[in-house]
Image (cartoon, rainbow, N blue to C red; front, side):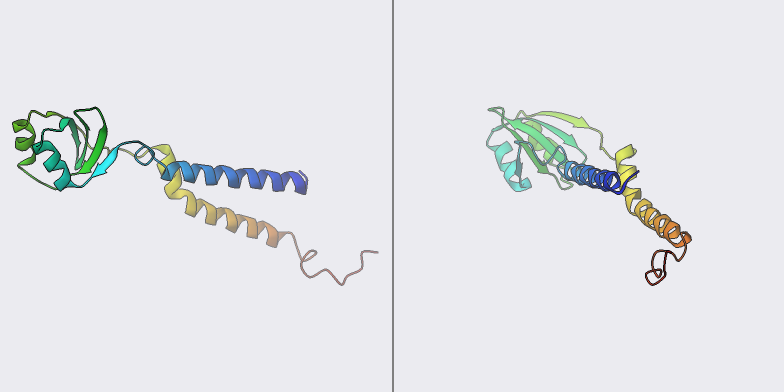
Length: 143
């Protein structure tokens, strides 16, 4: 493999890693059109009758206004929240927390720094095994 093709392969791998990291941090919650509310604002919207339905998933609340616009909020441990939602006729659904087993991508992302260090270590070990003909051989004659 020539140096040119190695350089191209290296830049392609770097570009793919940058895109993967960008997609990771641009997860499904960041690009949507749902507005994020403070909990006090969420409660006042419920009390004014503007909330149609909510889904409670752990401490995260997502739902829709009566006009259909989506929103998100974070709920502290409030025992009266469900009672308030029922009093104002809000449809409540619950979903399990998403803290299940990590996906393959998450596992690879967590192991990436260690794998990178191992790769650099292997690279340097191979360079050291090639002998002294490269680094300090500038004064020697090849004739």
